[in-house]
Image 1 (spheres, rainbow, N blue to C red):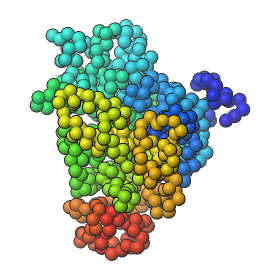
Image 2: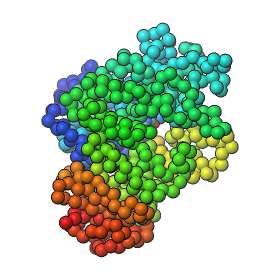
Image 3: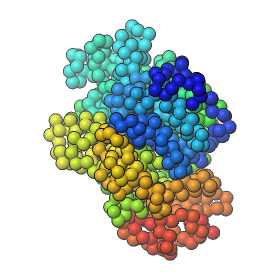
Image 4: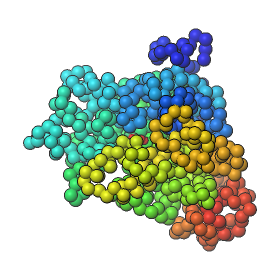
Length: 587
Ligand code: NOJ
């Protein structure tokens, strides 16, 4: 920090602080993000520097050398803006400040500088489908005649109904966090739309002033040195007007039909406008989180010729272990055939036109080693490595979610009192009121709840896993005694060092970056095999996705060649050990 900068503990405001230098243009060459690996930090659970039990920016700053050693290129930071924390920061009350829970703007500047000094970049979370209900914009909007009266989506009480009674909502839409997606506001005498919690009102993107305010805020962060944005539920911002009731399942009054707000008619226009206002000439990494997006839409949003966004972050593969149409809690075992087919559809469908994010985990998904791997003592390491291999060798930009690189497992919570997440708590409250079976609810939560990903990062085998000296906001997984970063760094055969090698391969091998994908043996339920081809170079990835040995099927004819990476160095031939994977250069 320069001598003229205020001390970190002094109150700071944007206008009092010298702005860090804008990052040099050449630091972001064309298409750099196609060769990059992203690491996601969920700040509240990463590292706590001040002992209040919640992770913070200074905690992250203290761990940058760990990220450097792993070799990742970009850090995606989940929200640290000012927020009442109703949805852990995805409810923002000031986009241009840091919540005191996490630190200060000065800490943020230091984090940006610390990453850039180490050759890494930073991507902020951009949550602009909605704000917090405590944002000054929303407060003002509660007065219909104020200049911001039209900044949110307000509608009168449904005709023939009294305000507040069931059915009086302007449409029958269900909120992602249970109950109706509309809340009556006494002061204004109207309902506002909230696709997420009642404290997350949806912004009205039809209003050009709203869009301008968002772009100005994005520019402010770009000028501060950030390298891009991960855009929260961004394909929900263009609603389909007029807003009308959605289809309902038999016996239900609320609708989970998303057609009124997913991929609405003005998406391309909004992205292109945002591109002109913020992204032009900057080569930012821009990632659209897009639940329910179709392959065709994803291809057009990310086609460079359209000047919209760099890549899509979509959810089809992580929906394959839920019963279709019944929501995420209706558990169904994964069929590897379905997953292989799904990956192939996206790889082939985007080839030469669009760009995908490759991920198993994020802060909304359970831990992959518990979900589709085997988190037993015997197979945790091998299955975590092999899951990493089959994902990281695909075409797209890989994401590593904190703790994935050491094979962290699900939380294995057994009581509702252990959960903190608003999604689970609301769902439990409503389901129990409707006579649900608690045991089966808890089984679904243990398998799929978002808190599985949010238990504190396991740094060492000491108290609170080295995450905090205070009481962690969410229970630390007791398996930190065996599974932790210190142990993983010291063991050359750890999941960490396997991920490090996968990241190296992405950096050093053009065929990993650009090679064309082809699925082999699509019908095999156990073996996942594919090739990547670039010019005369051809890589084979072959993996046993099970805890039993497997024979490589006959429709994978060639398996011999130079081995670039393997989980089982002494193995070979056509038999794969449980969770064995190999990356082989053929020919
Ligand atoms: C998607 C985010 O990833 C999730 O954590 C959040 O709850 C919703 N969007 C609402 O912002």
